[in-house]
Image (tube, rainbow, N blue to C red; front, side):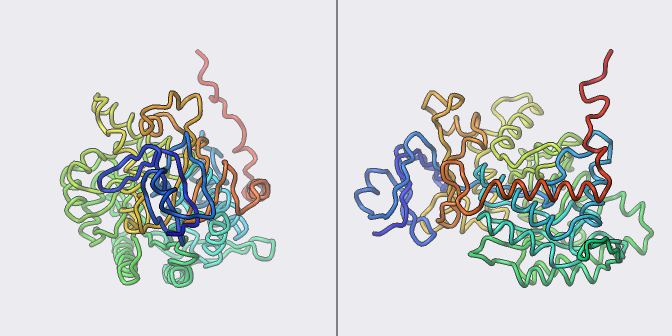
Length: 478
């Protein structure tokens, strides 16, 4: 057998059905796929290759997967976060009024670079912030995001769709250098989303996938909206869900809690291709609904929503549901480091149950590898180190003080590693990170462009005051 690359000498954590861990293991890659998995001794003897990557003292895992994040957040992290709802207001203003395609391109490259540096090979990115700030008034914004991701070399599932009724919504563009405002209808946003799916879904060697989104309809929306407006919203979400089914796309919603899954079930939104995020304070019957319908859950243990309520991830998994981990993006105060979110998840649920055995270490790793792949409908392609799957691989350097002594490597990986320990990343068999450095893009140029676009955005919204330290930054003086 001839291989393009062999990663040899490291501990291979396969996440296959037997959850094999191979000491002094190796993975052979050919034609973008995993061609063989075994010991380094056997693969070196049986397979010829043009390149061997020495992974001695390292651990080889499937590329990590982040099932819930937001495009755009990378340029707004921490701004106004101490001012009540000010950070969310900034998102709304920027995403609808102050973000030309260049903003979305710069942010996509920055976010993809961060993911890459942290060993995240696949991530979901909502094109905006959720309820009223999806950037689907024009296909140019999604195109800019997709181009940026493809350049860096990671995978992105881009969620697009309309904002919640009532419509129209006020948007603005900057194509002439000046702001031009215009109203956007539900029909226009749906047409934009259809065009995005037609042009981008499953393109660039499968690096870009498209998902459909409609904002969550909760009890307060029915109470606060006029009956006719709420009825329109219910009809709209059914239209979006039907299009997702027709096109074979994942359908996702951001921000379920306290009874909203009951409402989603009545609207016909649940099912194997549905991914619901946050899902805090669910009722027992909602847990049953999720498991019975094979609806997938994106658990974001580091998000603000997980402070306001608890996602019953342990109970959901006990009921048979697929629960995967998300970062909820890099803002206002988080990162794309899935090691951080694994560790946060373990402490989060162990604290709740007052039981240090809750959410075993291997289960936490499963939640951002094979379970995440299942949540995205990609289990047959990624999420484990198995022959025939796409060669999305992350290599973590264990020769670090905080990861030594060199024993119990899987424990070291999940409990002590962080994204900065990632050494090498392959996506589709291509080395896109080598010795901690991206191979396809100029990192400094991406950082400079992100800085410039953020500065322009701040000027457009008059947001200089949102960069200042708040009066209570150091805590209240007694």
